[in-house]
Image 1 (cartoon, rainbow, N blue to C red):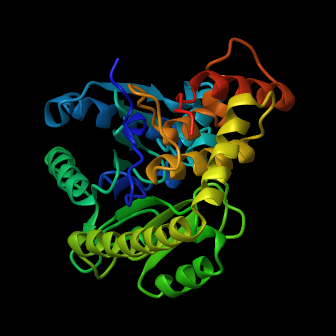
Image 2: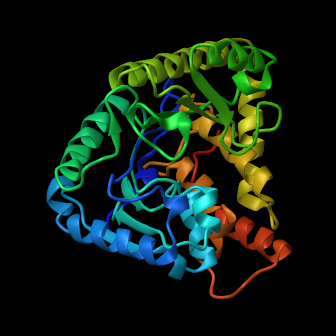
Length: 350
């Protein structure tokens, strides 16, 4: 079985980029938008789209799995949402929705979700330029089979006005454990939003964001080209990455032992705790990821663990998939601690 894309997210000094994503929203001109379709029409739409996309593997070179979301178990829906394959609205919807996903989960095609067709590309690190090229190629393939709803003045027509235009959302997730502890983070978020980007905590907000992961995305799709959108998100993400690196370098120069102690304490909690709430796990994993990247903690030879993978796998849905029975919240906290103890990378003694 191929490794999932999120298992390949590394931790390197000066590189705080977690992931890149490009998503395109499209609609087939033959049908009304999804919220105007009855179940029979929605089912017909999905069937025709899947039939027309039956050779999509030749474009991407990936094997795709297909799901009828109204038949997928609730726990699997939650796990899909945690792995960023679907959003909360789709996870909670009872409407007919189709999902095509590559084995590595780096490419997905959502049918009759918020729009008729939403293609999504994910990759570890900063790879927005590369993802846009792949997304554009797949979009050409799909548009050659289905005529999109398009207006010469406004561009691609979508269910939500905020997506009209290019229909593109470009995202970069950045790990900012030091910057997030300063008052500067709020000033940056407010200031950078004026340039047409949104910055939000992946697992919270700027005041309480366990994991210290921040998602940067464009807020405008009209009046900008795809390349301009990609360039904007890259520029803002680079600014945040550089500022985080500056703060980290300064802290290491002035407080090396204190920072090292903080990281080893976080590792100790993860390694020996017998019960672990999600927020505590994310906060401790964030510190360990920072420690590995900055050389504060060193992995044993041969150890190659993506800390971000653990951040995904300790989420409730994905954690429950590893069990053979339902669990209440307290039982899940115990199982989370056990899972972390068994899957943390081994480190060298300081």
